[in-house]
Length: 176
Image (cartoon, rainbow, N blue to C red):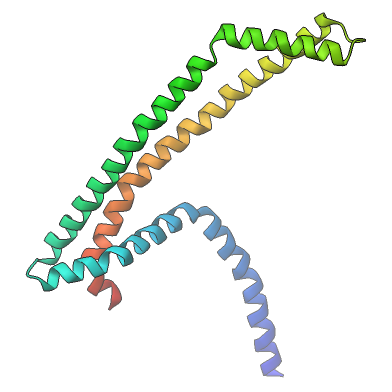
């Protein structure tokens, strides 16, 4: 009797706690992901730091050296990728000049008029203008979340190394 009551109480407690746990995880997901990435980086860097520590480096100096090397590698990759991306973007925009777009739209309107002769050119032009205006408005509405994501990325790029540093530095105290 008492055993069944305890089991029912445990199930009821589980049914109450589980949804609260999911809600808590949902709201803390960004922090948990950041912490998980910090732990992952700490696991990646720890063998290198241990090797340097065995070869007469203090742990703090080994951590700073590994971070410096990782930062230099990251900056090297970005300094190579960013100019290439900008160059390709500029090439794309130069190809998409307004005269080029206008000529392509005229060709597109003509092809549509040939395919659908019962539709007037004016109606085709109106529909294309309507669609392009909607696309432009959509571009601006998508720009705001993009900028927000950039700032979030920069915040992560600042917080992640600090969290990883402290995990690496205080590894022995964390394990205890």
